[in-house]
Each structure stands twice: as C-alpha cells, then as structure tokens.
Length: 133
Image 1 (cartoon, rainbow, N blue to C red):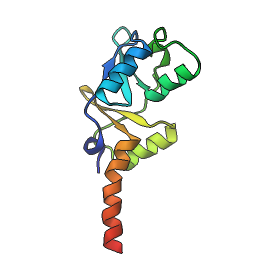
Image 2: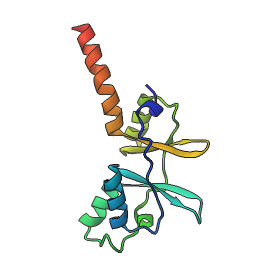
Image 3: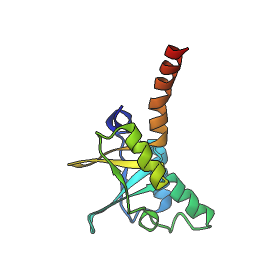
Image 4: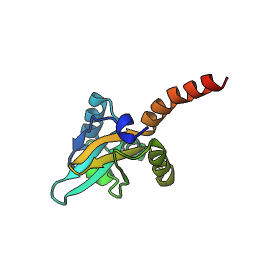
C-alpha cells in the first residue's frame, strides 16, 4: 500500500505568526494532529504538531503569546505519495516523529501519520492472520 492511499488530504496550512492557541483551535476544528506552517517571506515549509503545543504549555509558555513559527520543525522529512507505507514508517522511526508532510510537484498534498499507517495495516494483518489460521 502507498502513502497516497493512507494519507489525510485535509492539509491545514497556517502562518508562522499564528499563536499556539489559534493553531490548536484550527487543528481541533479540522480534527488533525499537525499543521503545515508556510512562511511566505522565506518560502519555508515546516510542521507543527499537537506535541509541539503540548510541550510549550507544559513548559508554562503562554499559548496566546507563543507563535507557531517559534515551535515549528523546519528540518522536515517529506514523503512522496508513491512511497510505500513501509518507507514512511521507516522514515518516522528513524527521525523519531509521528507525521510526514506529503509533497508532490505542486506542494503539500497530504499528511500521513502513524495512526494512518496503523489503520491501513490493521485490516491487512487481520486478513493475513485469518488466511494462515
């Protein structure tokens, strides 16, 4: 199975000036665990996740003053829609993260998460177990 088959095509894009509270509200409203942070001034593309927001609040930082740009991961490993789920899982394991921004020639087209991969693999695992039983 390929990344394009598992990824969420709901790509929330925010700017680096969004506060963490604004980012959290938008992520919650769209029921996603990550947002692409697009900095038009630097043509930079990064990602902010629910964990980034949680870590900031856990460090007693004010979510109304902290910006997404200050908590964005900018050294992002991107996936291609044609990667296998195994390749995506290896990249996540190697990098220690739970989300990959999926890019094609036009830019971000999705985000694939560990949850997406598990969702796809679980039914396949059940079918395999049933066939071998």
